[in-house]
Amino acid sequence: MRWALVKVAVAVTVMVVVAFAVPLGLVIKEMAGDRAFSNAERQAAAIGPTLSITTDRDNLERAVASTQAGADGRMAVHVPATEEPGSLPLEIGTRRAAEKDLRTVRRLGRASITEVAGGSALLQPTAIGSSLGSAPIAIVEVYVPEKEVSNGVTTAWLMLAAVGVALIVGSVAVADRLGLRMVEPAQRLAGAAQALGEGKLGVRVPEEGPPELRSAAVAFNSMADQVVQLLSNERELAADLSHRLRTPLTVLRLNAASLGEGPAADQTRAAVAQLEREVDTIIRTAREAKPPTTAAGAAGGCDVSEVVRERMDFWSALAEDEGRTVRLAGVGRPVRIPVARTEMVAALDALLGNVFRHTTEGTAFSVDVHNGEDAVIVLVSDAGPGIADPRAALARGNSGGTEGSTGLGLDIVRRVAESTGGDVRIGRSVLGGTEVRIWIGLDGWRSPGASRGHRPRRRKRGAAGRRAAEV
Image (tube, rainbow, N blue to C red; front, side, top):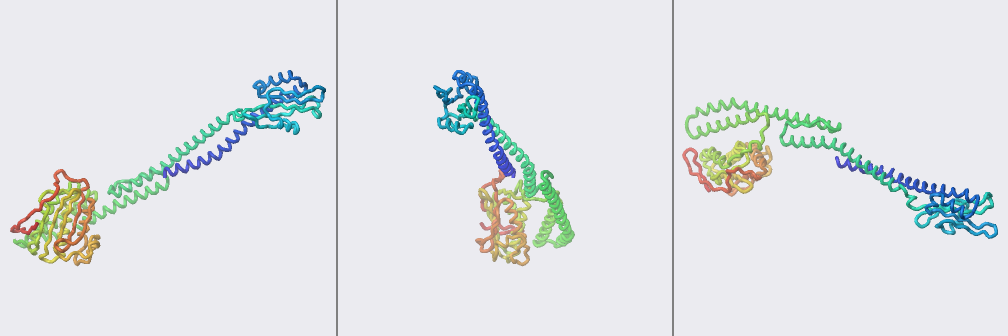
């Protein structure tokens, strides 16, 4: 917008300067010519009194020499022969005009200007003697050089050009300042909108500039205030809803404590404790002053191998009870990723929970971690029936028609992957069922202690948490 205003100002100013400067320059040129020829006429008229008295050469030469043009050699007098016996034509000075031009002026009886070499010549007819009616006509020729005709014209044109350039520069400066007054508020508004999109909820725009931009700034600030208020209400609602779960959780924990000993009782108590921790995490996060973001928790990242081992320890007991064969690979070395530990745990639990929820007992599954140069891939595979429409399953809230599914689990996984620049793919696994591939982009992020490559890890069956790990 700023340069557009400058271009418009330049175009308008140039048109105005041309419209006024060109005619004025032509008028100046005409005035210079008129001044030169008027001066020549005055000098030619100065010879008239002498011609009216005498045609003596000496007297005429002295009269010619007394004028400026005559002294400069630019005046000539052409006296024709009279009717007196022995009279001859008289030429004083250097003649530059053609003979035919002299005859034309004598015949017409009025002054004339003719073109000659190097300039122009003024031919002024003057009657000889006191009787103007019958006296012969002498012609006074005054030579006007071209430089005298254009004297001062170049200087005047240069001054006009300088004034025109000054007007153009001034218009550019004024247009630039006006454009700056409009562009700066617009740039501040655009920057604030970008900052708000990046999660900086405290950004506001000064209400400056033209009325339209001031109105836009007022609307933006009002919108930002509404966004902050809506997010605050949402966090309060999440905290209140989560807090309501404390009462049934307390009853569940007390009932689980009375189950006695055994694998099922231990598993139930562990699940209740995990549920209590998740609810506490939701309440603390919702009560924070700022909404949580993946980037904030990913500053230190986590060790995905450690997370996988920990969660597989949790799920292994249930897998053994249902007769599921489990394969775990690629977790023998630390593998750092730019994802918060809590979010990686939530994503992995969502995938493993889907395996137990949507496949029959005895269905095998596996978890593989592949560490590459620019990405880490986590594969969760099973030998179940698979997913009929993988694309629809990745959409938030879409269960793909599976009974008892909300469709939010895969959305949690997708958001974790996309926060690092990666993605999630669903396909057919080597076990014959579903394979969910989590591509976690590193994008130059790698902790100094991270390692490259992976080594398969072989786990043996234990007593309480035994599972089969096939590499």
